[in-house]
Amino acid sequence: MKLKIVASAILALSAGFASAQTVVMIGHVAPLSGAIAHFGKDNENGAKMAIEELNVAGVTIGGSKVTLKLMAEDDAADPKQGTAVAQKLADAKVAGVVGHLNSGTTIPASKIYSDAGIPQVSPSATNPKYTRQGFKTTFRVVADDVHLGSTLGRYAVKDLKGKAIAVIDDRTAYGQGVAEEFAKAVVAAGGKIVAKEFTTDKATDFNSILTSIKGKKADIVFFGGMDAVGGPMLRQMKSLGINAKFMGGDGICSTELLKLGGDAISDNQVFCAEAGGVEGKAKEGMDKFKATFKAKFGADVQLYAPYVYDSVKVMVAAMVKAGSADPAKYLPVLAATKDFAGVTGPITFDAKGDIKNGALTLKTVKGGKLVELAVIR
Image (cartoon, rainbow, N blue to C red; front, side, top):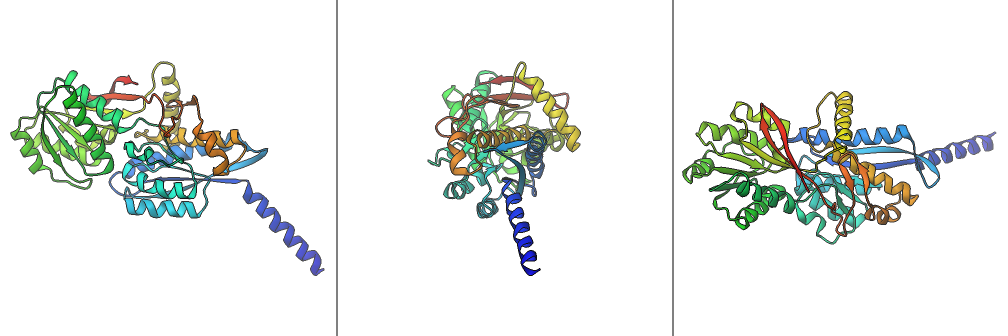
C-alpha cells in the first residue's frame, strides 16, 4: 500500500514538473508608481495584451505547446530599484525581458541581463548608450536620441524658424541625451542656442530658469524630459508671459501633457517627436490595435504600449523559430530578426541591436489634441 502511495506521489510530482516546463516566463519592467506611472501602466498593458493574444492563438516551441506568463515588476523610474528588479528577474531565470521604460533604468539593468545571458528588448529607452555597451543581449524597437534629437533640432531651425533657442533638461539619461543631440543639430543647422538650463524629473518650480530664458528673448524652448514636468512648466511659461514655442521628444508627446498643461497650451505651440510611426496601410493595423486596447483596458494608448506589444511578439517569434525558449539558443535568432511585421512597422535589428530605419512621428497640438504632422525615417 505504501509503495502505491509513494509511486502515486512520484507520478504526481513528475506531472507537476512536466507541467511547469510548459510555462515560459517573460519579464516586464516599467514605473508603476511615481510621476510617470501612467506610462508604466500603458506599457504593462501592452505586454499583457500580447501575452494573452499569443496564448489564445497557441504557441508551440520545439514541438511542445507552451503557456506564456508575464512577470511584471515596478522600477519606479529609479535606477537603484531598476537594478534590484533586474536581479530579481535574473534570479527567477525568466526567458527574456521587455523593458525598462526609461533610459536611466534600462542602461544599468542591461548589465545584469547581459551577465545572466537574458535577452532584453526595450520598447522606449532612447539613449544611444544602451545598445553601445558591447552587450549581445540588448535590443530596442524605437529610434534613438541621435535620430530623435537631431530631427527636432533641424526642425526648430529650418521649419519653425527659431532664432533664439533655449534648452532645458531634467538631468536624467533620457533628458540629457535628447537635449544634447537637439542642441548639436540646432548649431549644425545654423541656429543659435541662447540658454542651457537644467531641472530635475521631480521638480515643480521653474520660475528661476524660465525668468532667465525670458530675459534672453527665446522664441523656442526645448525640454528634455517627461510630461509630468513638461505640463507644469508650460503653465509657468504662460504665467510669466513667455510666448515661445515648446518642443520636446517622446517624453512629452502624450495626452497626459494636454491634461497637465491645460489652457496654457495654445494651438501650434507644442511640437514633439515620438519614436516610431506608421504610414499608409500600416495605419489600419495601428488603429485596430488602439481600438482593441481601449476596449480591453478602458483607456487610450498613452504612448509606448504598441512597442511593448511588438517587443513581446518579436521575442516569442524568435523562440518559436529557434525551437527553444532557452536564451542561449534563441538569442542569435532574435538578433537576426528581419522584417518582422509589427503593428509599429517592420522590425529588423542591426549589429548593435538597434532597429533599422526607425521612424519618427512629428506632432503638434491643435484644438486640445495631438495632431500628426509627418512620419520621418
